[in-house]
Length: 193
Image (tube, rainbow, N blue to C red; front, side):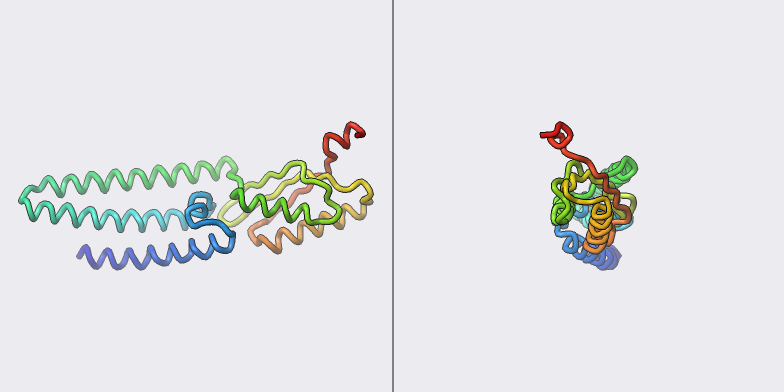
């Protein structure tokens, strides 16, 4: 019976890992970094639950085997305690992940670097003074940036540049649902240097 359960859980785990591989590849991050930083708590919960189930089945089998070989039922009890500790660790990890989303988790550093590069690629942009990102939900990201635009850009040119940056960001990262750009001079520009 444990073997059948193991096969069923392995199939589910493999599907979750396939989705993790695809998403990590799309974002250009490692699988470990994706799992650690994803806002998709359903995927994370499924992956962790399946991993815990597989490990729990192995531990249960070892506990049963130990009890059978030694005749001591304590092996089965120890296996049960270890499985309980494993499930507690998984639950605490998922709680921590969900709490970080409640307080505004930022996008992965690599993604922020690429967003910054996209902003700087716009000809009217002189510098990115400040860049903030926040996960709004599974696969949903908000970008807010203070941008130092070139002084020769007109008001109409700034509007067009902002629309172009918004379009490029949403095109490259479909998860970006909100973009806020704040024209802000650098400190040197404010001092007249």
